[in-house]
Image 1 (cartoon, helix red, strand yellow):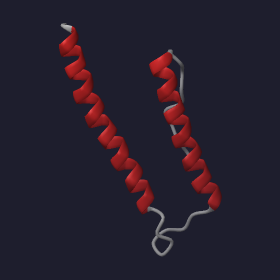
Image 2: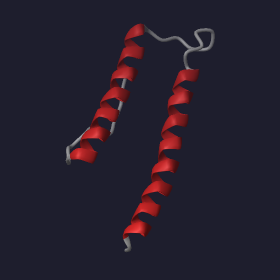
Image 3: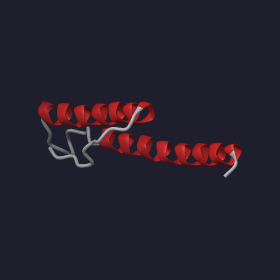
Length: 74
C-alpha cells in the first residue's frame, strides 16, 4: 500500500469514527434532563472518568501500545 493511500484511509476512517464518538458524547449530554432521568453526581463522575480514561488510553496508544478496558458500568 502506498503511503498516500495509507494516509487517505487513515483520514477517512479517523474522521468517521471521531464523528461517531462525538455524536455519542452529545447523546450522553442529552441524559442531563432531570425531568426525564434520575441520576446522581456519582453517576456523572463515573461517566466523566470513563471518558477521560478512554481519551488517555487513545493518546497512549498513538505513542505506545497499552491494554485497556472496553466495558463501562455505573
